[in-house]
Length: 116
Length: 110
Image 1 (cartoon, each protein chain N blue to C red):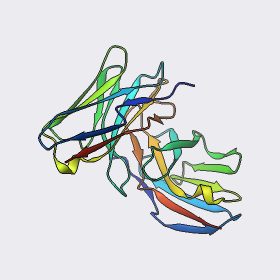
Image 2 (image 1 turned 30 degrees about the vertical axis):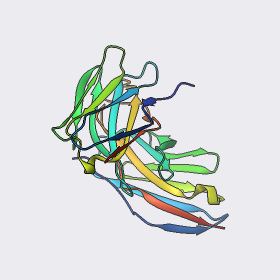
Image 3 (image 1 turned 45 degrees about the vertical axis):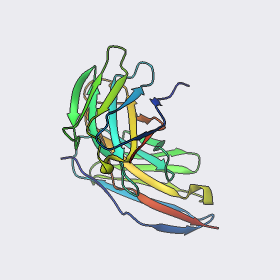
Image 4 (image 1 turned 90 degrees about the vertical axis):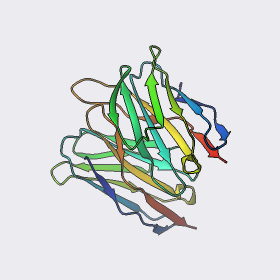
């Protein structure tokens, strides 16, 4: 079965550079979530999209932006990178079944971002 | 703020024993709860989902949901060393974010 695809899997950037992470949800899933996970920490919610509109926002820095496109894939744009941005970035997708109920969220393999 | 709380552990159990993981949540509005398993450096892997009160069994795993008491639990029978991981409890409220607990680290001792 198709899963959530993230690219790239690994990324090394220098401070103050820009990075773009991509997420391709499971086909027919309409909701995408982005998470950041530092070493030894639980995943921290950044932002989510439902039907190409932002549905919720968490602890996403102003230097980051994201969007969901017409084909439901999503991109997380990170500018002015800092050393503290080094982390695993996960994308997950789910299907909204109506009446405020979603199916399970499945995660991609993640992108490991290293800022040097 | 919808909060999901877990005991961070570590929880140590001998091989073959039952591991019991617990989670409480503060908002009654969620209809969907999940348990994820995460190995170090890997993405969370969904192992159980539960939507209604009661027990749900899948192989060695049993999830329990009690909406009145606002807790979710996961039992792992015949624990194996390969079960050693961090287990994340999560809930979804509407189509908003999946809210995770802080995770419980499980160690199965051979």
